[in-house]
Image (cartoon, rainbow, N blue to C red):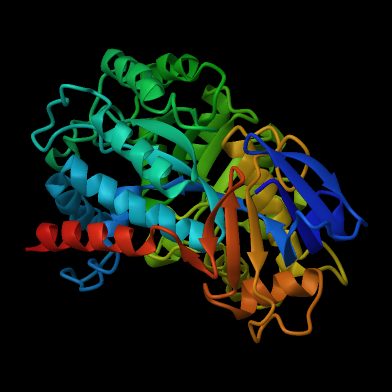
Length: 452
């Protein structure tokens, strides 16, 4: 794509008509509103920027729907985790690449153009490192290259099975590193993504359950100024265990003992006090919300209304990838607030404002910050990540501007996207990714082997 003409486009300054976008080397070189189409322009009706799924465990896409039969009197996140461990222990590098490839194809078809891959499946089945310590990171990079999605790789450090340096669970053996080994893994992972256009890297101390304080202090400098992501306060039991260990709740402990700033993304942060909510917002970090997974796992509901009133920043992620889509995450985020407060349009920016626009704008900016992208949206210098909508969809008919976003987010599933470009490369046409059939065959073959 050298030049694209859009009858309507959502720019950082707001909606504009008759917008021409030109692209050079995968980035937006010019944005010109108010001009007629030229003969060289590819023409579309309406475009919005692609946004990031800031938190993904790609391998878990392979087990979607496999943990819906209860084997316990009370089924929780902690029992779901046992199913996840069994699945993770069975996967080969080929399986991981096949599953990640289909996931990234699905993300692109559903409006996500970048992924923050919180990657902790590092080692062989027995827990020993592969000859190439970054073998699995290389498979994630290959899946991103094949699909075209933008990649922020977040290698995860995992050393313990609970607070206070508890011994790890045997099911965690493929995740485990010490600090020196992780430094080598991180260096090799940088090499694995070095030829992938637009890719970058950060670090992901898994959680305060899995990372001791002295390890966290040693890890943060390894990020080399890149993003730092960590799970925090996802479950009530986690909060209780953290209180028993330290006398503080997880978010409070991090804000008091770690250098939490705008580079950080606290994943979930579901269970916070009002003081923690306000303090997290004040630190400028991003709350990485994964509403579909948080509902699936029975985590709880993030205090979004109070957090946004305090000026907090958020992005959305697909986490366990049980269901993948921009609209799914944003709709679930708002609906959770409606159920909590028994009100409608809880997260709107004010009277008369569109809830869909409020959610979309915040997730766009927060996702870019969390994945260390200096530009967000359809503007000069940004990666050319563009999504066009299909105005023939019944829920978009007759709508313009913010009403289109509301119709897309609250009244469609995943069938209202027409085309998607990543880095200026058109990878989705008429709602179908060019690798959809190949990716599905590879995924299906891998999962059938794993379930046999």
